[in-house]
Image 1 (cartoon, one colour):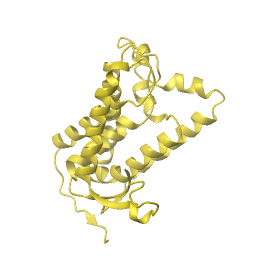
Image 2: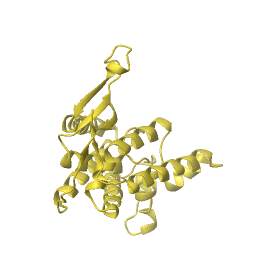
Image 3: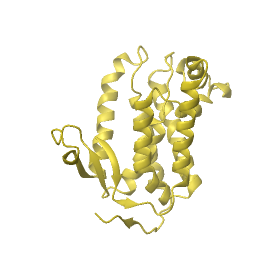
Length: 227
């Protein structure tokens, strides 16, 4: 399932959300055009085996790694989810609190993945944990919003028939359950081969959910888009 848009406009212009997307795309461009792309990744990605909590310089990749991506599909999917869900979350929070939520969720997501494979020498990269924080916050704040979603093959060749409106609670609930199941299945081989960092997704999602539940509520007017 690929989200296209939700049915409620953000309470204000999502400056921080758009800035994060532009920075992520810019860093990805630097990554793929670097003279040594592999060296670029090894320098800024999170490599669990290199982490030493007594040396703060080895902890910096918990932040820098969330601006790297493993390919075009990786960054497009992450930025698409952030574009659809992040703006409403930013509209609910003070702008820089939203930025903190994003970065903090990414850090916690990285820690969650690190805990399960602390000796892995495989680079971890991607904004998935941070984006999952925005998804968790959206799940907590706007469970009844409708999300226009593209479901491949649903329309048997017709793109129009493949787009349906789904409750955000169902879509994001399905997503996090899938991450939990996939994460549990991945545990036996974790750290031995590359793959999707499911526990980064789970850690980020839970962080975003708890964060907005604890943050003081704001009474902001949301404008519904006419269908």
